[in-house]
Image 1 (cartoon, rainbow, N blue to C red):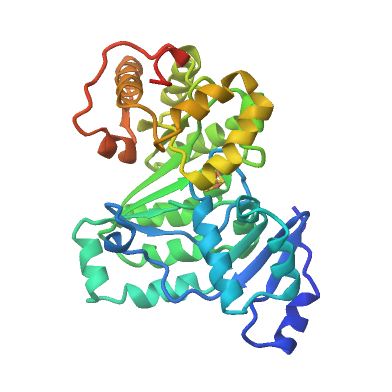
Image 2 (image 1 turned 90 degrees about the vertical axis):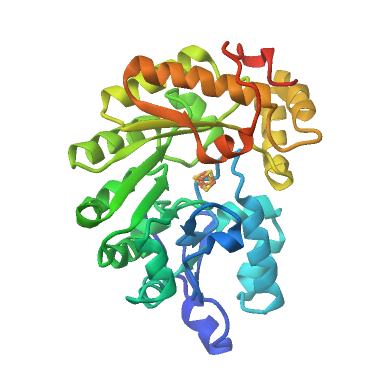
Length: 360
Ligand code: SF4
């Protein structure tokens, strides 16, 4: 991959020291440098049951179902209001819908490591909470090993800081084999902390994956990464999330995925079904209409008044996965969010035969 250093870098600072520099451009993607005030998101603020870190804002992998697109819109709006974008970035982002800006205008938190080091100084309130068992997830809203990481190494810097703090509980979520570049620091962390790498993979079918996740690494590349991590003694498994109804919920396909993960030593396979908030629908529905037109009406109906699938579908999926995981001897279960939402939903014992249940 070639990153072109743009001449805007120096010009921008001459025009205004407040403006965020364009660090580089690659094809149609611009990388904008930013300095974060805080990188460790508090569970009380996010309303999630864990701390989170996202080294980048926006994600170049551009998965059609991505639920995180709405976060980018707020950042763009705040940046425009604060007048910190260069004219080129502002105009080009304004010319594209927010869901596309999420993929094409990536903010790089250049100072993330130093901010985190300050936040985690020994004896600080956050440090104490984290060494008492609270979990940090890296990559909840954007992929920490997206292409930008190859050059900017923000995620690696964060991991270097975490390696200095024993007693943590850390989870990394990614679709990229680039995570294996950092095996050395991952092993250092794992010596003194609990560490787990969750590789996201929804299908083994390369051509299908390319349609759904156009710029993400191939399934084979992710599986090779899984094998490499396990060979290196790192706890790692698969997040089969989200299962797309009518597209990737074919029982044979799911079984092949769990079997392959188990053969490569995955310590777990987690699953959850597709959630679609409004901003995600703006990207996903046109994709369905173009690529899977026979499913369009089913999707419109299923998500007309809610952003997740029926309790019945989710419970059936969970039960099916439990059986698969038992069969192949791997830990498994519903992903965190689906398990939390599932509540008292009655668990079905039979498999949802693709379109059979999901519109109900
Ligand atoms: S890798 Fe994750 S954050 Fe990036 S586009 Fe895909 S779903 Fe969204």
